Image 1 (cartoon, rainbow, N blue to C red):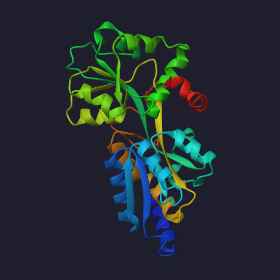
Image 2 (cartoon, rainbow, N blue to C red; image 1 turned 135 degrees about the horizontal axis):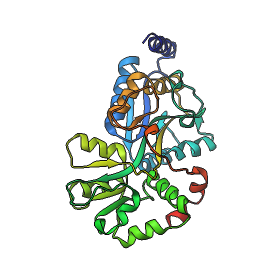
Image 3 (spheres, helix red, strand yellow; image 1 turned 90 degrees about the horizontal axis):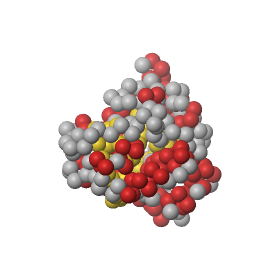
Image 4 (cartoon, rainbow, N blue to C red; image 1 turned 120 degrees about the horizontal axis):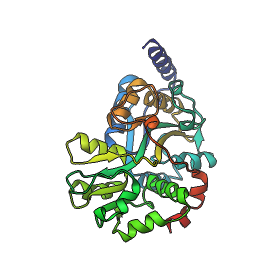
Amino acid sequence: MTRRLTMLTAGIALLTALPAAAQDRLTVYSAGPANLIEALSAGFTAETGIPVDVFQGTTGQVMARIEAEASNPVVDVLISASWDTATDFEARGWLLAHTSPNAETVPDFLKTDYAVAQGISALAIAWNPTSGTPRPEDWDDLAGPDFADLVTMPDPAQSGSAFELVAALYGQSDDWSLFEALAANGLVVPGANAQALNPVLQGAKAAVFGAVDYIAIGRAAEGEAIEVIFPASGTVIAPRPAMILEWTRNADAARAFIDYMLSDEGQAAVAAVYLMPARTDIPADRLLIGDLTLLPIDVEAVYAARQEILA
């Protein structure tokens, strides 16, 4: 607690030294849970007095907005649902370096000089236990006769995490036999993550192949008939990078926002929506990275071959 208060006091002292105009407002664009960015913004404002303007949407909507504002950018802090965004923006020279003092317990692979994970999701099987189907244990179970015409999948063209799962599973065998079997078994790809999950929640389908875990865990906590199963053969994770745009006029406030996001309170808010916290010392009511078997994936190589993989 003493360490946290010291860092918070130092951050507030820095902010009070800023010109009033620089402290006026902070603009944050976030791809992810609306209730999470609302909680983080409210908590940050309560501690610093700085109001936060939020635009929340899918990664595609957020990127389209940044593109539309290219001649007059307004976003200070961006939180994406795909680490590829941080890699791309860093390569373009669009990011401002910041190392948060609260990132000490964030694993090295979840932070760079320019980006740090807000939290992490993983992909899983989301299964409806009232569907009359046997509980699946691994990905290939969903290609079996028990699941004929009963499986959905998020569209890899719309979901970066679904794309990475496809690439990782293809890399395991170096062939498309699993996906050919799924297609022959009646797999449907209705749209992005929510569109894949809804038919399973409604009972029209039995399982999602590659569900975003925190969404399904949250629905289960609300009493929905859904179980999240992490296949023993492995899955992929999707860190959610937070980054400061180099054109910000509120750099110190933006740094303070990242620091608050990684504070005890900020990471507790991440855990409250069933994402894995980026910090390893924050408890969460769910399985964490160390509990999962992760599939190897060369992210740079698979994104270079994105169009080929999607085809």
